[in-house]
Image 1 (cartoon, rainbow, N blue to C red):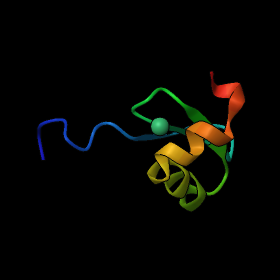
Image 2 (cartoon, rainbow, N blue to C red):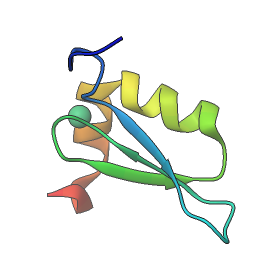
Image 3 (cartoon, protein in one colour):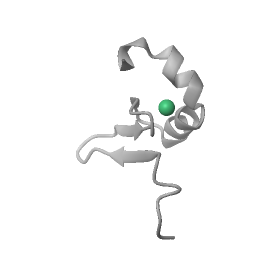
Image 4 (tube, helix red, strand yellow):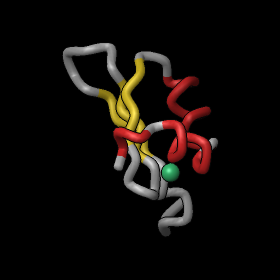
Length: 56
Ligand SMILES: [Zn+2]
């Protein structure tokens, strides 16, 4: 598990809060408190990019 093939998508937890931040390889970010929601959003890459005009 070295290499960067799976390093495009990241989910980061903010200490002191219940918020998780998902970061897509395209640079889009989303915050949610449910890791499942974050991952579904990340894996739906084209969708999230369209549905989030604020991510520009
Ligand atoms: Zn993306």
